[in-house]
Image 1 (cartoon, one colour):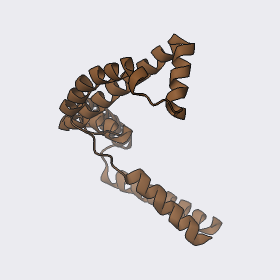
Image 2: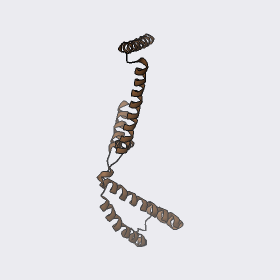
Image 3: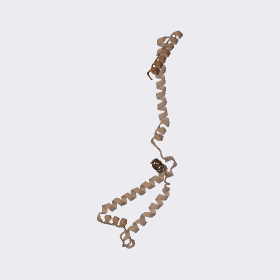
Image 4: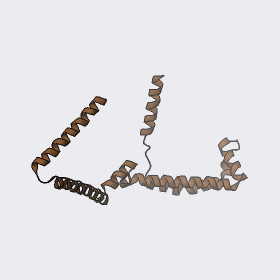
Length: 171
């Protein structure tokens, strides 16, 4: 059973990593331009070349299209949209600047932009300024007396060591 799961995992990983080579946008445009007249010609002459034997897929479409012309229009529109999608995908694939981007890369680009960097730097500077002002106030209230500053530092160190010892006792 484990080997089945491992095999399934390898298959899924292979499918995820599979890259389908896309044709160039020029190829898609040429094939589309040549294929449309050929398809129209084949459709118009289908009464002559389609075999008299019933081929299920061909008879299905012929029956559906004759029954409701709107269905034929929908199918042709779907085919047109697929061709447009293939052309757009090929264009994006041909353009090296428009490589695949995930959300993380988009956020990284936004953060790495110059305006974003300036905003982040301004926020950092503002928070540093606020911290320095708070430190200046503490020094101003304590006075410039070195003995008083050393006394405050020792008191803080004792408080921190007491907190650490309480944490060690609780775990």
